[in-house]
Length: 165
Image 1 (cartoon, rainbow, N blue to C red):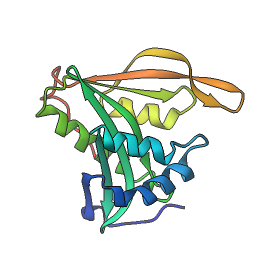
Image 2: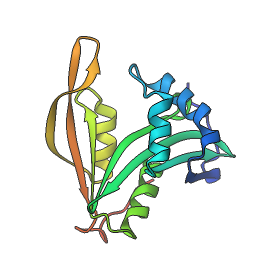
Image 3: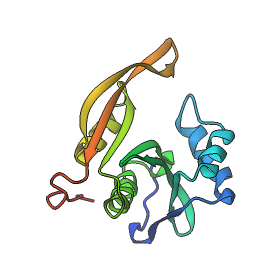
C-alpha cells in the first residue's frame, strides 16, 4: 500500500551520519541482498555524493553517486516501499542530474538487474540508454544475475531533456 502524500514538501539534501539508521532500514526492506552499514559509511567517508530525499523532514529515499574523470556512476537509488509509484525516484534522480550539469560530469552510468523491469523503465523515461551488459553482476537466489548498463550523456541534447514529473 502506498502512502498518499503532499509532494510539494519533497526535498533533497546531503546525507548525514544521523540518517544512516533510516537509510539502512529502507535498504533492508527493499533488497534481498542489501548494502551493509559499512558500505554506506565508506561512501560517506569517500566523499561520494550521498543524498537523501525527504517529505516533511522524514527520509523516504536515498541515492549514492560517485564521480571521477568526467563521469558519474549511480551506485544505489532506493525509495521506501510505502512511497513507491509516486514519482519520488524520478524526482530524486532529476535532482542528481541537475546537480551534474553544473559540474564536470558529462555522462552518468548505472547498472540495473536484468529482471528489474520497473527500474529499467524509470531510467529509460529519464533519457538513459541501455549500452551494455555485465555478466553475473548481482547476487541472486540461484548464483548470480546479469546487469544492464545504462548511460545518460548530459551534454547531448541537454536542452531537450525535460523530466515529466
